[in-house]
Length: 105
Image (tube, rainbow, N blue to C red; front, side, top):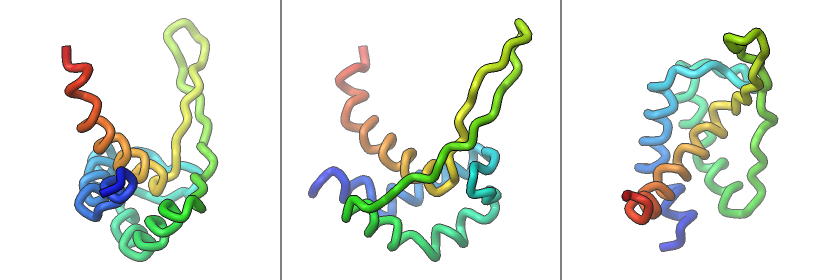
C-alpha cells in the first residue's frame, strides 16, 4: 500500500478529525466552527481524498493573527482552515508512526 493511501484511510482521517476537534481550535479563513466539522467532512471527505490522490488539493490560505508577548512585542501565528488541519494531522500521525522509532533516543 502506498503512503498516501495509508494517510487517507478513513480510520486515520477519523482519528485526525477527533484530535482536531479535541483541540477546540479557532476558525481559520473558512470561518468554520469546531461543531461544524463532522457534517462538513461527512459531505466532503471523498472529494478531499480524490483531490489529494490526483494532486489537485489546494490548502486554503492561513489566517494570520498576532499573539502578544511579555516584552510587548507580538508573535505571528498562522491558523489553518479545519479541513487543512485534519489533512495535516492525518499526515503527521502516519509519518510519526514511521519516524518516531528512529529518533526515540
